Image (cartoon, rainbow, N blue to C red; front, top):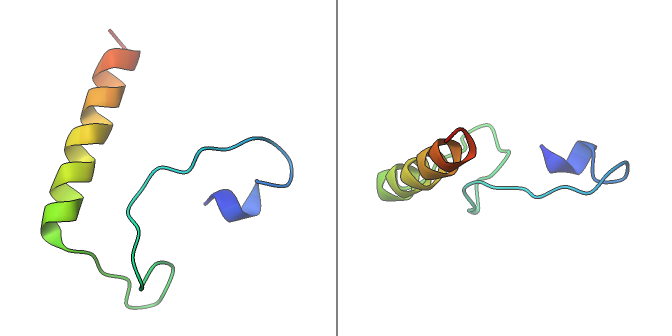
Length: 49
């Protein structure tokens, strides 16, 4: 979670956004999770290529 390290170094936070972030009942639409998974997978594939 970038909130805890942003004062010490540059960060890029990558993830889902929404009204319930960091709440006990955090939730997101399944479609958003699927899309983020595909993006993250592509980043890792390119990084380790």
